[in-house]
Image (cartoon, rainbow, N blue to C red):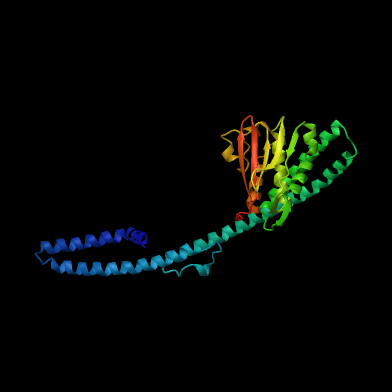
Length: 328
């Protein structure tokens, strides 16, 4: 109310000044003609009181209109606007509705364009799986250094495709999350199995200590997260080993002896598109893997944290206890 009163006085400042000047002119004229000044003072005071009462009534009306305008939602319609009390109000309301119609048309066009793009890339991601499956079938009966290398590259392509699909589905209106209780070790073994060839080719050892944990989660989405974390660990670990173990009752750790993460990059590694110092050295880094992991884990009610030291390795910790699910 105080702000509205201040706004009203500011809008009527010219009228108030003219009123004061008029009273001063009357007082000067009465003084010059030796007339009693009370004849001017009494009407001026009465007019001032009436003006104050009028101003209070107008401010109450303005406050009511302000509350109505402040409560309007995005779905603005003409009947939701307060009744116009002047030609200016009617003009402004007409402009508002024209702008609202233009914005709605623009939003619909943008939404249609976005949906078309999502449909196209979803179709592309599913279609590309056919030649990938055919190439894998061709390489299945071969066992050589070249075939193992090709299988490894093919697995990397498959992960990129899965990353695209995950990115497209993440903000989709429909969700395919299915929360059930699973044996965590089975999910871990399934994820590790996909990288068995890379472990062999790169002469890296895997230290997997069964956790014995049962978690309430979505198997498909949690598997995607584990695969992304294992992929990163393999990418940035030139030698040594990768360890998978449980640190606490509900915390799963994936630790490596790789190049580590620079201290200045740690606060930003889960940001969209951020690659950091390590990513700038890898031209194929997209900056989406860890971003997707964090978003997916938030949707599942889990969380992720990281500890790392350059030259000594990185440890990703997944708290798989059920927290309040973040609605994005």
